[in-house]
Image (cartoon, rainbow, N blue to C red; front, side, top):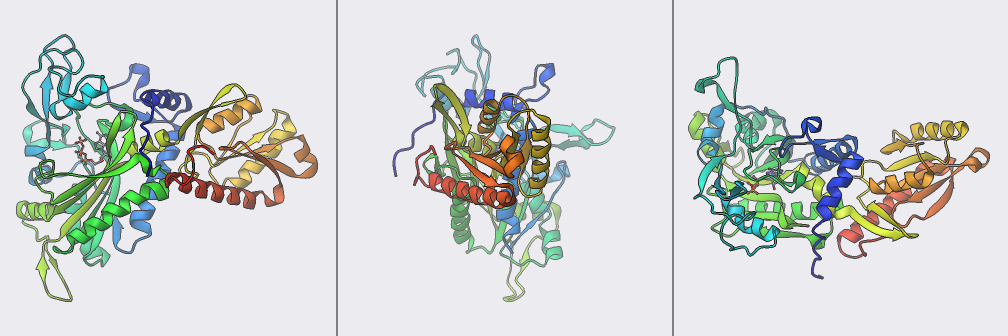
Length: 469
Ligand code: ATP
């Protein structure tokens, strides 16, 4: 396979500005000057996120017999976080700059922060100003609040920093209510909160984010096989289901020093971001650490009795864990392209047609009443079958450009001839080619064209086709 070409360093900035302009994502509470590491998602960003979530849910839960979905609460009994080890150990090493910039850093990120600023990874002092740094102290990342009206330590609770503990704590109740047998998994997605020391790179590292996690319970001794299964299944999901370029993805196994205390093995699916390789998803063999810890702390029996062999054991767990926001970021980064068309720059998001916020745009050629009525009617008819959008503002050229910028694969144009011949033009995003089709066969033609897009995206993901059209 050819060496991956690192995306240009300023790609993230270009994407952030497109994201704001087109309403993918932007700073939360912007009218008050924003708030650090918290983001809102606009109408198009929300559509992309729903598509990502539903593709994950479909592949992890709906298409399998052996995974159940749940939704557990964000605030849990604080004992959960004591037993899981988060109260004592969910912390990062914090160092302070005592020089001119006074920034705070994660000690284990200092080298990467220096590289990002064009410095040597071992350069002394603060990555920003070179000033002296304090020694490291552990900083717990969990947000705290109070449950009920009395603000004392007995009422202190935490906002969950991961969704996984909900699956462990609910293990027994799902097992008895769902008629599943080991091996089986429990999955959920939802918001998580971490008071990150050095958030950044836009939506890559935030303080409120959304996770999609699976805890897959299996018999000890079969755990390595299941770990291998999820390791490769999750890697290929990105190319096959999202059309992400394989050359920008890799699996990186953790060596012994990097492994968390509870893990027997762990690997990261990494993506080549404009700022270098970074974690996209983590897959870990968590052994029986969590269930045993909760069994001990709660007194509840979390073991499993095999009805066939009569064996009793505490199951091992394989966990693939990923953030919706990080997937959204790589979907956009991977799709972003610029090219010159007739002397003008065209920005185009070559996105997978099932992730794109709009699949079919319906555009009247001009604002003439009869064209608008016809186009609007057509868009209403297509709406139950595709993710559609109707747009009658601006010139047709500008509207095509806007659709290219938001990744819409197909645009249907209603022109004056359409009123006579009952036919419309379909324009496709990547090569900008156009075909005329009768309205009676429009739905089928659009389906066929979207299928072609899926094939082309898959070929590009595997490196079988050039990045462009
Ligand atoms: P790090 O060491 O980089 O802080 P981690 O290895 O502790 O992170 P995990 O607990 O493995 O992170 O998180 C699982 C996944 O959740 C990550 O792969 C990422 O997709 C997502 N994620 C974690 N933290 C954040 C965050 N602060 N913002 C956005 N997504 C996050």
